Image: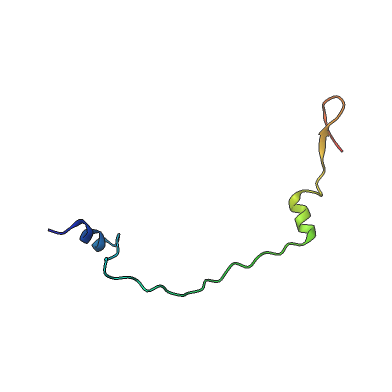
Length: 63
């Protein structure tokens, strides 16, 4: 009869106790950072969009 540990190793859910994997020293390439211009940043922040607010009478109007 097999033990539970042997069954886990057979199915690949556990590593054998005596054997250790050698660690690979593979460097992964990092994602390049996206550089945005000042105009693109201002557009993302919404500074060039019209602003609306409630004025006298409670209606939304452009400021």
